[in-house]
Image 1 (cartoon, rainbow, N blue to C red):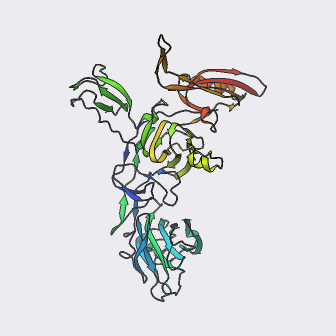
Image 2: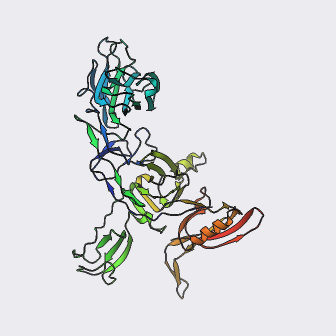
Image 3: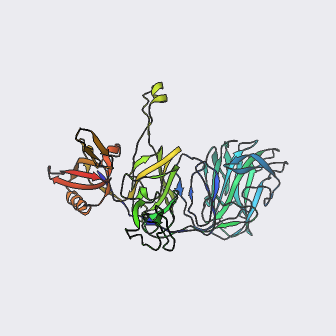
Length: 530
């Protein structure tokens, strides 16, 4: 039995004074306006969980990141390709004469001794499926490619990378239709008066005329690689992302449709307003409602939390809903390793954790569709689709400053989520078989004199009874922890394999028995929230 101790969330402010480019769920590069939070998908694998993108300020030193004609030099010609990298055009780099050192290059300025430079770009095959890419420098001591210790390469996609010399690497096995993303990192051992990124079709010093490869999304940065910065004539600097301190909701793609309450506005009867301080909504119960405080019960009636915050309140039956996808980004400001999703209607749940210092540190996808066709053609075609309504993760890495992105998807439908809990984990003990689950129904039935009845259907709460075994070395600390959780709703995970063994609520009683020399037994009765 595990407890996820929920962090209480408020609003967390975010700033970024410049736009940013990210990839949406279709893999298309889109611009996020200044001041808006950025969540991105991995364009190389859209099945992975999207993640928050918090980065320092960065500059793309390549003045033409998507056009290898203007701003580039060298003997090779470049022409527009028909292919594209998720909406970004590829350009051919073509060898047009027999010059043994023919390449396409872009100068990125002088570099100081010890400075780190990172080049990133996407490649595809042209008439050849190989290319050589590297960072070069011209210095008074003519370091050129440098030494093997100066540089390293990482690739994502088809192909294999080989070290060639210093900052130059040979990539073979490129695809003409799939993207290969390349990152080269070089630490310049001494000052360089002029540096450049070079792209060779095929191998360095090849004399074969007509060899070509395709390249795009070219970026060169100092110190570290960041997300793509689009340029078209000048180097572009993207401002730093700023997240305020404190635990809370940093971003949600679910809009708040109710207007903020304004005491100077006159509201009609049945008008609904939003209180930004509490995330609650209120409905006007009188006409000509002006200047009345939201606490005035003669003018306003509580109407629940906003759609955005329904999944973050303490009630299982209040659901956040949104077309196709719900995305929330939470910062716990704690070593939060557990996530519980309840009362969900979605096809899958994706969870990621992004640390401002270490970058993306965790991604997970859980499929909520239950495959129960039993290899039957009839069941596959006509049996009702079953879905899990819950998801549990207890594997998030312990990053105090991590931003956790929770995504629920239901393509073509309306995604819903009734409960989303993030917090530290508390180990209560080992759950035993024999766990029981029932519900407490708050509906009422009124019988008439002739036996007929009127049913008033209301919400219900889950009730769980479970036995756990606890090592005697920990029994006292477990009891003290449970005493601290009295009347406090938390997420109880009896077994992540069964949704019926997971609920959000508070225990009504617990009883421990020191049964063996090394282990104790405990019975817990837990009632979930409605």
